[in-house]
Image 1: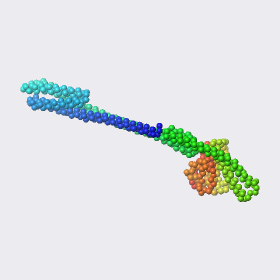
Image 2: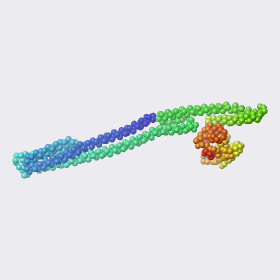
Image 3: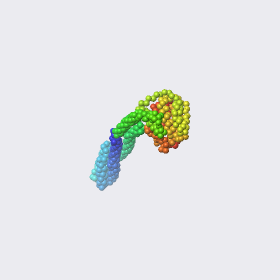
Image 4: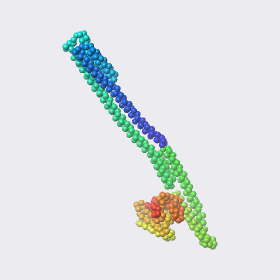
Length: 479
């Protein structure tokens, strides 16, 4: 998936989760609204109707008792009004009551009320004829019994209404708790899912970019292998492929450059050797008498020829080292004699500038090495130290055994190396020299060749330096 697709997918998932939370909340709110509507429109009205029916029934009972004591048509009319009101309230309650026990109670209440009305109507019929009611009126006892049953029905109706209201309130509370819990759960899941998706998408972008950053550092260090393979989004994958193409082309350019240097070195070495030998022949008088002025010019030509030949030889050595074509002959060899020989070779150069050569060689074991190549490394390091040490300065060689192997340190008290150049000092054709040092610049290949030789021995080389306090080049060879 592309980065755009991944982002849109994560946004879509989060949108679905947010929609689910909203939809669930709407459903629960609808349920809560329905329960609240039922309580307001049904249970509250039923309580009001219950009160009105009780009042109407008790009013009818009072009128009925007064009629039994003293016949009065006005009282009977009031009794009939109460009867009509009760029937109206009962009818409305029947319309609001839910099917089940509540409607059964209302039906039983209506039956008892009709029975009560019939008994009262029977007594009123006797009173209208002018006949008094009998002293022992059986219908009176039955009327009281029916009235009491009706009142009991009203009491039961009130209990049912309260129970129904409580059940709805409990359901309302459960729905609120359930909605709150579900909303929290869905929100937590959405948060975790969004976090996981963010981590996955960010990692799928950041990790390849970090690998490409590392590859950039490798390219800057000279590693030009087109081996950048990244499981990444297509956009980053295309960029990685462009990196590989760039590495392949840089590697080809570097190969062509190495071949060019190698070819030119081979082609230049023969004519340069001829020029040098011819110059020596002139200096020896083989071509006739040489004046002092001619001798001076011929000496300069010989020195420059030697410098060019050394440069050509360094280029050839570096080309072979980079191509892996230099044979190394490893044998167990003691380092102290090798260091002493190298110091002896460089002693005249040190004495010409009054530089003191010091050595501090401890007990070290023999090292498996190519002695000629290690001597070349020592020459390069000591030559650089002598070149940058001030007149009358000190160059020190120290050898110690460490956990990593044998450690060789070459220290000078020269101007030092700026921190910004330490990382690149071992690169080809790179030289770091103070502008006012007055030193002759070399080829910039000595340290590069030294690094290749040391690495071929399985060792490591680096420099520690501070501007104004000299430099120390350190070589560690496995022992």
